[in-house]
Image (tube, rainbow, N blue to C red):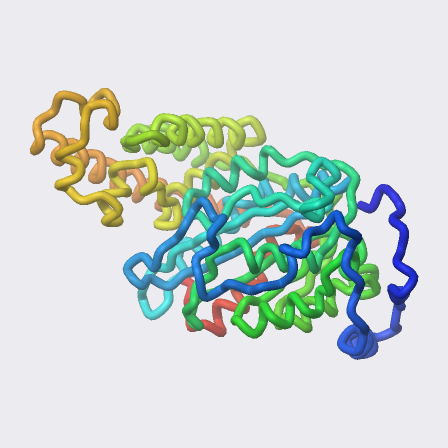
Length: 415
């Protein structure tokens, strides 16, 4: 929410409110360029789209792993004042999103899910950065995304949607494959046309590179139309949805939850942290379990279902995943010093190390299978308990848009 007024350049056109969406689109396409913000925004932030090259400032460089299809989602959340409900819905429904696509396939191949997270419109971030902050680049480590969501707080600011989209285009390492799903989701409640970058320019270029922009207006449908959110989505070839951020996410507890959460604790024991990040990321995994558990045992059960899917991958710090994905070869594991390994693997012979990891892999597969089976019966129970359909939420917006776009890319879902 815009908490203060900003002097408007004399040549900046006033935002009109046309009666129909056709008029809105025509007006935006014909609009003159929005002047750049004063010198606080560096010229280095002008749009120089680098989709064909790895992003130099992306700490999580993702390679084309085994040529598997990918679902790339960049989530841009307005964290200005009054957006606490938006943040709460997103952190509560991250695992719903993951579970929605756990059974997705493209030509019988399971895709890789990568999520990036940004916040914008927050006065706690520098004005020179457009009040925007990148919390993660594209990553398969979903706990990093969850951690980022739980760290968000609101603070009054200016919401520059065009600028935020531009930065997501620049900062992330987007897939070059036309058959992958590549989507930006931007959610907020102020005018879509604020800021130093014309959103029309940003979304047009995104569409050129096969990246759809989906807009989620935190308010009434009519306000979203009026303030350009629907027009931005249409221009970008994406979807528009308005949501009620005051709606609380209800987590229905089910008879299966206790057993699922017991299995989740056992699942954590199959992770074998290694290297500089291992111990810290294993601790993060446990902390995100605790965060979910404090909200609801039902939310923890949803998270456990996500952890039982192929989308939950941690090759950067878990030796079981690293060996399975080919990130670390058997020869490298054999040669690792004890200081790089967890205590149970220290002092083991070469063969004992490999046997230890194989046993952990077998245990994990067995636990995951039981979690999946219980989760299916849990879903049936929850469906029976749910009352009349509530107003759309962030999770609904994300899943509806991705399902539609997935159909256009030959993805199927084993519902």
